[in-house]
Length: 124
Image 1: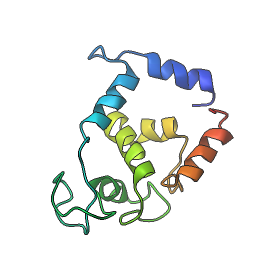
Image 2: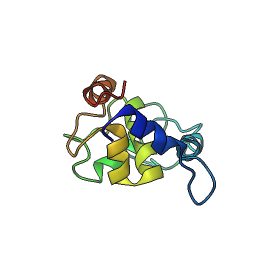
Image 3: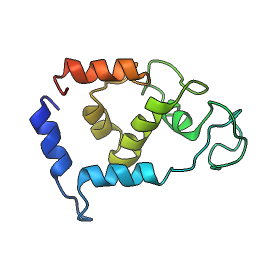
């Protein structure tokens, strides 16, 4: 996405399901309500087991892509990882990276880096 208007227009488009693209993204995030971080890589898909840490299925899935981030993110704070995961789960990797203004091996798991990617593309 090269400019703000193009990105905005993308989010207004309705897909085959009749849902706007932004509504699909929100629905993906809402499906994860109640998920709790884990103490280890055990039981990552269970919403309430092994709780009390920074391990999670979102970083696990993105780390499995191999080069989504510049390094593995499992075991770190995951607020921004969750956002990226929602985009990938909703739109597939290529479209998600365009919407997130991130390339392969990005530093996008950090909120400061993510906001700078948007600034560099003049999205915000």
